[in-house]
Image (cartoon, rainbow, N blue to C red; front, side, top):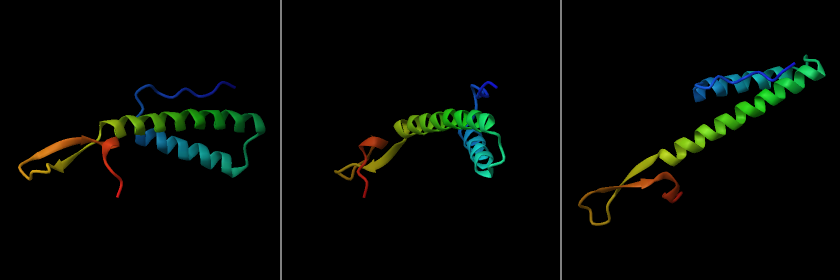
Length: 84
């Protein structure tokens, strides 16, 4: 059995939902060993895809920060923001 292919234009929410379904299948304990392995491999690929999409969004997120002078605003990249 070949590992299921992930659609190229799958949205994050769809991939996450599909990943959750794969986890449910594995946790059920009802799959034969070979099928469990294929489901696991597919889940790993979905996990990588979700992580990649999150990383891409993280890099694109910008936050409006009040400029120190109080005169305006500046955009600051997500990774440059301090966690408080």
